[in-house]
Image (tube, rainbow, N blue to C red; front, side):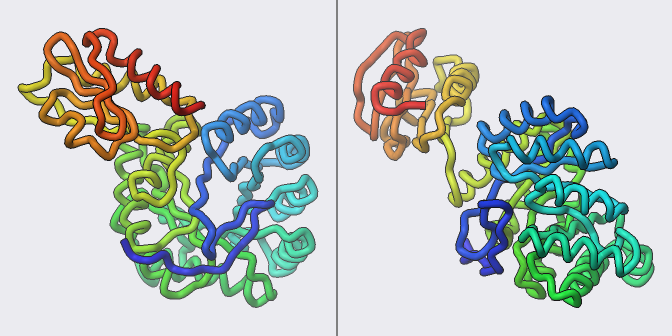
Length: 352
């Protein structure tokens, strides 16, 4: 894997993006921000799942004011998602937002941009410039068409506007529902800016397909050392977004939170209900945040030997199976006791 590209460090509350800091997991609430109680409940849930920065939509003044209660009690930094109205950005800053997501070219006159930048600077709040393929400015679309150049040049125009005001606490994202377009856009942009990059595939789809699309695009960029923070955008619960993001970072061996499960594919040698066993193990391990590896293997051929690197594991056989730890067989149990015996072994050495 390519060494990660070095970018500026930007602070979102007490969470650092860029530089040598770990890649940060983000999500966005899907509650009505005006209902602070419901929104805070959801934020608590995603934070427990491993979300490190949360974004809230701010469609009107009431939502901007409700953000004060949300920011006051949120366990993680809150980002205000702003479109078009600079007054909502100013109100969100007064409410304690730790970051703004807006495009300075879309909030009105230069004076309005100056007001927002001044307020953000005074509070030490960064701004994320977010360019989506579906909302590229007309001038960029007419000049470049539906290309990576259009997204990159649109983003750079927003960056230039902030830089002209001596504001450099900037994060940038370039998103499309097309994986190749997104990947090429980030590749181009990463050569032209030193600001942290927020990775994502927008409008990726449902939990199943959207996760695959996001893993393909975000994973390709991470493998090239590009990216400082990720959001996997799904038509699903924000908790599922967070779980998918952590699974991706773990698969890329960049960060790990909670257990990693390895399980072999089913074949004619399998004599246990491997799929249901692996799924049950996955569910029962969800409360663990400690990183360790668990193997669920279908037969002796793929048993302790092939999974010897796993911290814990099971290998099934006809009517019975093996419990092993670090490649060493611990005991033999009936097949219908495999999962319970595995969990007993894990609980003896690890805590949730």
